[in-house]
Length: 430
Image 1 (cartoon, rainbow, N blue to C red):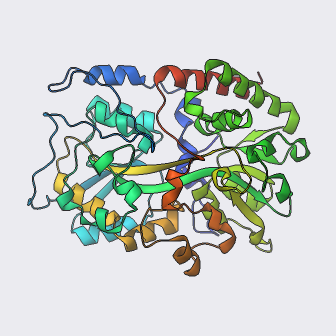
Image 2 (image 1 turned 90 degrees about the vertical axis):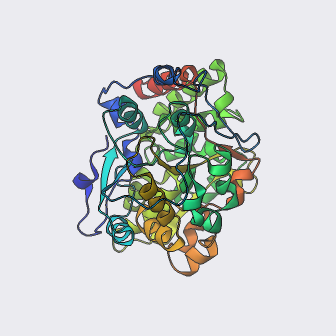
Image 3 (image 1 turned 180 degrees about the vertical axis):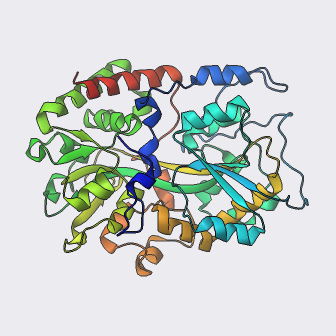
């Protein structure tokens, strides 16, 4: 169970012990009732200019342009920024605390931050109309939902010169929002495998046709773990079973994935933890753990004194030599909310965050990589923003275009229910 990061603050490290992804499933664990996606879309389906709230879901192979609606226009050009305060709605602990006062000074306004536990909570609050914010930070998977539900407004690129100037072309014109009509990118990341070379045999992971199979290697019983996240664990079981595209898995394939996860209980005494990669590996609680690339970058700050931090490794199966399986990749975004009372100021904030120096300052804390042209792997390593052996945890622009990359996208309500059913089986012992 993950808790508020202030309960996990390390005075010695002067850093948090958990990332914002600790909170992805806390609402479900606490029994919080959240509205189903169909209900949210149905509530917005009859607004003027929209015949139905269908999701425009894109992939790198088939990108999509999010629709525009008459009742939700972009702001005009040439307007002066409004007075503050600017109201941000972000994941818990997902921005460098030093960024807020620096941005406030640069923009000449007060900035206030409100946080949410997970995207279901955020969508519920925003769609209720009972809260008012200016800038929101959704994952790219939720962008089609936000557009269809009329939660975010189209962007006026006249206020966003740093988008074209600084950002990877792949995410200036992203597959999920061609032309960046509604979003600009915040960070990007992959999902792979982290391990310690002094506690695990690298040959069991590197060079393997299916590196994900290591989670079914019984010699690591008791020292292997996976993320406490059904959207990340179910795909690993599907990849282990040879399914190429988890989002297209059949019900039978999902049941087989559930069977594979149930097998892990006795086979390796599997543990599901959010902090397993960035804290559990440095502390020696795990030899191998499924990992988000940003958390592996942050793991360099969690090593206890006297332990060789150079033993950490990260592998993304999509780029592993000899691998015939895929690996997940995704990105998070920044948006201006529909109904914002300060939309010009909100655009100015987005542009501020798209500045290379400001993005780098934020990377220093969150560990998740901003897709900036100038912040190449070579630069980040040469300037010692991360240790060289963690270079595989960095994302390259072309990674989104690899045939071996599985770009995570939204699931429809029926499919998501099947995923959750198998996740519950795995957590209840079958």
